[in-house]
Image (cartoon, rainbow, N blue to C red; front, side, top):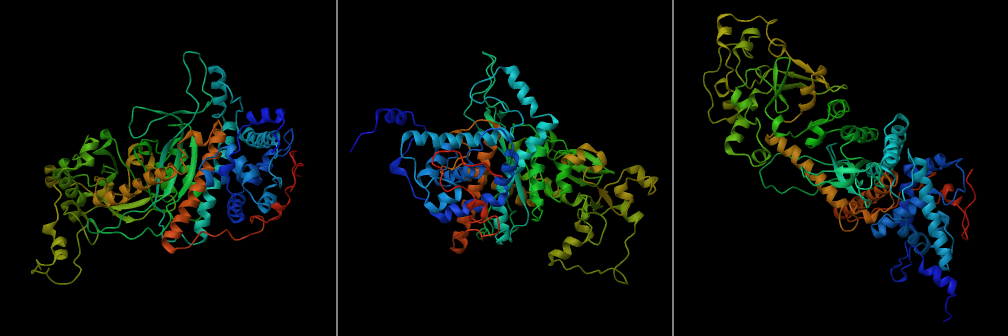
Length: 605
């Protein structure tokens, strides 16, 4: 065998990335076509072409090829790096797939050709990130802190936020394409619209700012993410994720549940600086999700979202049609406020004369006491249930609900002398009340007035009864309205939720949804594809990290969908039906040059 020329040997030693002949795998055209269909359907390549149109310099490799290479790399290696994309595109594709993507029919024959091919991919990704970055700067070195602060501030002004919102929309469109695929094929029929929202840490390879040298991190918009009350932060970004979840149906403890009847997909992604725009990022995802026409159910969130300003999370979430299931800090438990005379107790409005011992049963209870509830606390939670206001009308289009006194209606839960005086009960049937009570009938015993607690009114009210106008609205009116924003009442708008806190219903609602959040985090940070490993997405900058994380989550969704489909039906996820402009053999694909020969393709007009 004739040895390589010395100049080529020197180039081969400097080759980055390196070829690994023993690990090259030929990828079937069907899988390439499936991923291309998902990519094209998202509209991301076309929008990037429009953004890059008219920019100076050679057009280079088209965005579609760069993104497709990254998707294939993630699917087969779990890593979203240009090095892996280069190996897949030039050494793993068959001739037909090469023609779809404009890759030369022959793999690079020399080390210099390999270097040139890899650099074209790097430049292709760089052109994309440069066009989308609100404040482009040199990502190869650390900047002085003052310069970095100026670039980071550009992300916060009006033009910067517009560009950042466009970036997040492009990335989330790619993720939602896999959700649309499941929706159109009927795989989400059993999903009732329950979602869990949470932020997970996305570490980066760059080091944080240095006070010693007064230099900033290469990741100028990164920050410290603190998880679960930990005092040890992770430097990087926070990825806000939505997950398709469900609540636990009532039933005996330990009852075996059937298989999940829908794939628990990730329903959205926003990558941002930690602790910044926590609530608005979640609302962005909920708005994008409602555009698909999917049902709206319960949205469960941890205390980071409960602590948001109501205008940033709670109010818009209710106006989008979601019910809220929240958790509270120790100092926020117990009596939290009032609305039209009703007392807000752990997120639920109650009778103004609820016993103080029951209302304050959870006052300043620590997390351990709430997590491992004592028999005394469980008894107090059960005893205050009858005092809560009853739902009379579900939320309307603006998120306003109607509540009524617990002593009102055909099935009152308490006895209230005030209510009986203002609105006397009329007997349902003529004649005297039934004198015989069937003690063996549980329902009859529970509905008897003797089985209900009686409201204890102040002594002076017995001597000088107040008129209807003098009483709180919750007592004088037939029902009260609670708007999504609670008429500007900060605490009611912030802490109100739709499940009785720490009740059995809350346990069956909040805990399963939160466990689904942890499940999707574990699935996306598994050994096969770990979005939490910075080595799997080396390109620096928030723009590059957003696109790479979106690609990884999209591939993760396809894997979840395919695994669920095979487990539930024994079938495989087939390719998306060819549609004009979306299929792998569409005109947009055939217009790509079939022979590149190491030179830039002609510009697209």
